[in-house]
Image: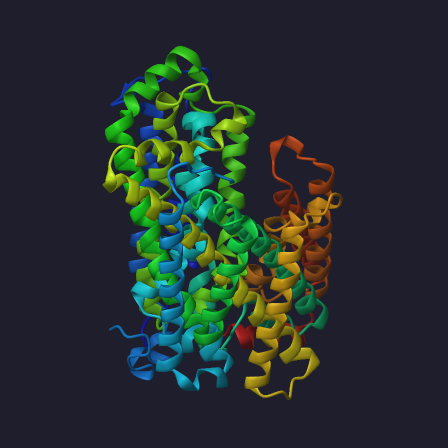
Length: 88
Length: 499
């Protein structure tokens, strides 16, 4: 039986989500501050977008490495539903 | 989102007719390929739990992003500037929240053949009142959600055809088509048409973006104009705007992830591997959809400066009109864009209707009214009650009530109150059924009350206040008096995850 793993039980997942959540809220820019424009986009907006992309990448890592239950082994996958919706 | 399109007319009618025919064709194909389908709830409502990566991804996508994303977001970006950039991360939040419960819920769905979110709540708490309250909140929220889509379909069709097809005819035409293909193929039709609808939407928003960049100029000129006139639209949010940003992230993240039709899609995945791959793709879609329409709104600031709030609501229509006048390519691309917008609304509506019917079939009729009914009868009851609901909602859409208007606004605020039962119940065996029931009821009443009187303390949305109270009651009530040992043993048994 494979080793079970759920994101919700992993401390590193919570830490990563907490950090990235903090970064996608633009609270860390000083009040009344105007940031320079880069290609017509304010720098702070680019920082928030980069943090959002980092969250997407982190989600990818969590899904690929931190999530594994035995349901595919126990209940089978496509073999039980041969060609049901016309794709592999 | 009533948009007036000067350019369209008969070409709009042509595109809509083609689109309707295509959807019906998909329904017919699904029906012919799976003739045994009507026999079982699993087949009809979950596509036999056999959706592969592409179809699953697109049905998540088309369900989550509606026509409102395309028509409603650019005007908001136009008015708020970069402070509306929150629309990109909030769609990523949905996937983050999924990861906190979907892995376990999917495994349990396979083990117990769960069909709806209420199915899990009923299994976990073995409580009639909790299951019925959860089902009621979901049906109420879903019905209002559906009503909103119907109104949007009517306005979209009237706009696209330049009023040649009146609002009412547009609504009836698409509802008949939607009900027909849903009845023919159930979840399979819905998911396959979602795929076509999702592609149409993506094509539309990208054409709109490239056309705007080409003809109206880039983000630079918009930034210059904002700097000169309204520099706050370029500055990071602070104070109440920052609170709004934060509460949108939390509310949309939790709310959209536990929408009943979103949860039901978890159960429809062919395998865990399929679900995982669909989620990874979904994590990047905000940049390609919300991000793109956000840019369109910002470009609009320089292209059409000084619009009032009411005028800015027409922004996408105004931009589409201007683009359609350029050449034949953009003319047809804009016709297709609005076809795609209507497609996106229909694809949200069909998912909501299917989930509505499944809760009636399985959780009310099948569990409490006639448990001994055959699966065929249960599906039939779900279809018929769904149809009755549609007829009632169309009448409401026709004659909007002058008073009590707000009872048709509540959606999110109520749906989100089922989250503690759904999610906490997955992990916390001590969770007390009574606390869950009272929390859900009081949370829903508080959220509804705040909405009715328009109260939004600290700038935080009413649904979130309800959820906070709901959670406090669930946790507090359980800490004061945990579930009995017998109930905890049952919870451990159904959760089944042991480390």
